[in-house]
Length: 153
Image (cartoon, rainbow, N blue to C red; front, side, top):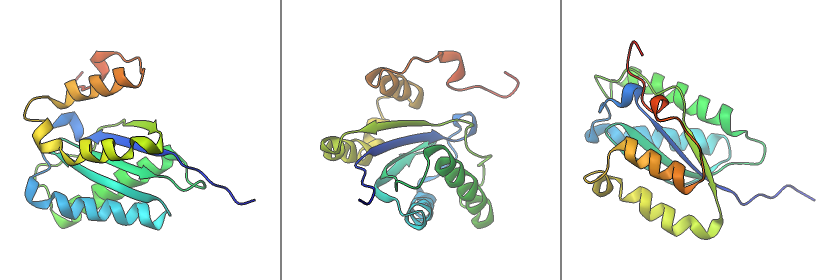
């Protein structure tokens, strides 16, 4: 029997220090680049978008791909791409960590809609508040002091 999986991953990570560096004009180029990385690793992208200081990725990961190295590859390669293409002048890099949450396939329509509506969503809620809500919904215990560390902390 071949290997079959049906796991949706909702991956979230932000800019270093949650700085609003991802200017809207060039975000689509970044998303297409990340989609290429996922495609090359035989992962299926359902949705990617974000706002000035973070992105959301909804994907199915190929059974031969591990989550942590995948996110590391996305962050390293996209960091280089952003700098080479000069997409976001103030961009200093991505935050150290990331959030990744598994979901049932039945959650896909809701998650796609949620990710599509990031611009509207963040008129009312900060990235930090959004993360706290996602953590709470997924039963993740966290220490708030580690969510967004500033230089020198």
